[in-house]
Image (cartoon, rainbow, N blue to C red; front, top):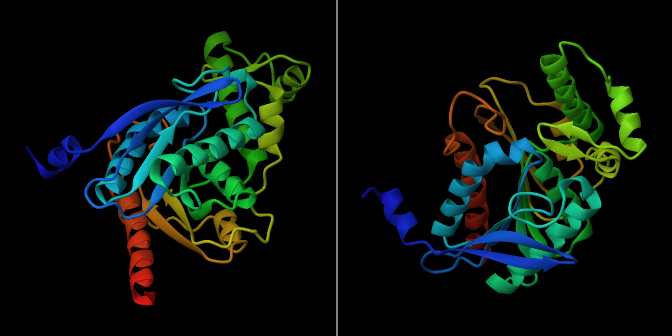
Length: 289
């Protein structure tokens, strides 16, 4: 048995449900291995198919943090995965409420009632950033390639619907303007098998993380994920400048949140970058004790 398998076997991972309003949300808590570090991390998942493709990377990193003594909670927001509710009923408001509820749940489980940390990929990172602006319970923030411009992101999703139309009908029957009008009138638009309704489209489209300055004063890591030598995205640089204590770094990885040829079990460059930032934080705390 290799060391990774041995550590994984010694871990305690418990599935659970917790209530948020009328919906039960599914979560899986990774309990700390050995002496608890006092850290607690809530993972905020990406949107629609990006959640599916990123799942294994999330599991692997959660186990790494648990092996380092942290509590970790991964969960499905309403209408996603094994949680109750319909996807067509979700919005930014419901997703933020789900994260708030999960933070409270993690606090009860870990004893970190005052501060827990947030990690999110893509729109999950965006939602983590928004949560940190409205909650005093967030200690640290890790944003993996977050969506900064919500309107641009929604247009990209609508483009996938056009691609599907072209493949199925050999023509574009409903352009993006028509799709938006259909949602505004009460219909849903299918995005890779997920029924997107207007409240979600409208609220995500209104997001602009470059607006600042941010209220959140804790330490923040922003990671651009891309090819080697890729220039820093202006949106991420602008986002960094809205925070009081944000670090912007790069990780060389393929876009594992998309359907690509390579199967991603872990993201070594991303993990190394993130853990390096965490270890610097731990050394700083030790020096100040």
